[in-house]
Image (cartoon, rainbow over all chains, first blue to last red; front, side, top):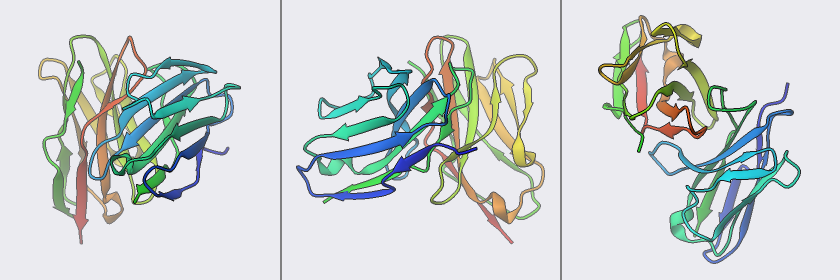
Length: 114
Length: 113
C-alpha cells in the first residue's frame, strides 16, 4: 500500500513569505506527527495529532508555525513570515495509534528560505 | 526531560567487518527505544524497536540491538556490513506517557569496499 506522502518535496521561499506543507498519512492511521530536521541533526518534534485533535504542540518554535488536520486525515503545516532559520527538512510521520506503534515517515519537504 | 546521545557522529568500516553504533538515553521513566535508518534523499525507515521483554531485539537487514537498562544503552550491531548499509542511523526514545520520538543527532555509517 501507499506510504506517507509529502508535498512539495522542495520549496524555496523568500524571507517573509508564507508557506504551506502538506502531509498525506497512511490510510487509517490515527496519529500524525510533524518533525523538523536541520542539516546534520536528528529530527526534532514539532506537533502531534490524534485524528483531528492536536494533542501536543509543544515543539512548535514560534507562533509563526501552525498545523492543522481538520478531517483527521491530511495535515498541513503552515509557516508564516518565513525566516532563514526555518530552513530545514520537515518530516511527517503517521502511526496506527500510540507510542508503541511504529511511526512511518514520509520523504520530507526541504524548505530553503533565502 | 528525555534525551538521546549518539556518541559517534561518523563510523567508517570496511565491507564484511562487524559494526556497533552506540546509543545512550536518559529518562526517569520506562521507555520504548527505536533505531531508524535514513538513506540519501529518502525518509526514515524503522530498523527495529524495543518495547518490553527480551533485551535482544532483531531487526531488518541483519541488524540487532541490545537494551541495557542499567547502562541506559541501546547499541546497534551488525556482524558483517555491506556497501548498501551506508546511511545515517538514528536512535530514538519515547516514554509510556507521550507518543513523540526524541532523536539523537545521528551516526553516519560509511562502508568501504
